[in-house]
Length: 105
Length: 115
View 1 (tube, rainbow over the protein chains, first blue to last red):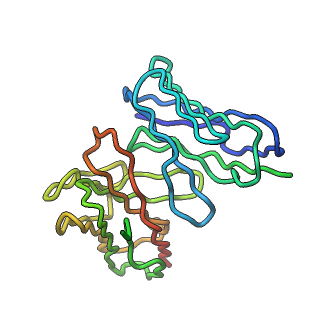
View 2: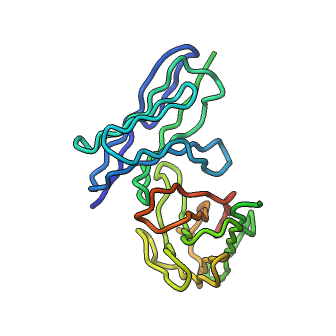
């Protein structure tokens, strides 16, 4: 069974701290997608990682892809409250369970 | 551009009733998708249409049918609703098929409750 697994599933952070969300996948995909979902809202695209070693950054978020390890990471730098949301990785049609991030002052 | 639109936004059905969820996109995308989202399970693909005139099953197609009416519209039908189909349904589109380098664009969702 093809799987995409994220961890942690829940993450409570203090503002200003750093943390990483991990996405392991069992498919042979060479690309990985990250999405953000705010409560009660739809999903919006964050990053598209198209090859091994790809790294993308937007503001306090940085995503990377290691296709050999079948691992993608989403690193959060100096978290702020506005980053509170649920983050999904996908490859591209199989989604992880989502990581619910809560950033507290 | 409205992007991806879905109707209705909310729906309550009784077990055994049928209904059709509508989805339309105005971005001239070739591919369209239907997902369901349940707590703790991420999104699961129900059906997708790589291009006009084609449809394929996803991970959880049982109990659903789809129609790619034209390039813009992709509908999802529940013939005999069951409580297990209570979920939030998202439609999405992308410029090309599943091997595309492009990301998906999601609609606002339909929250369906089956009693």
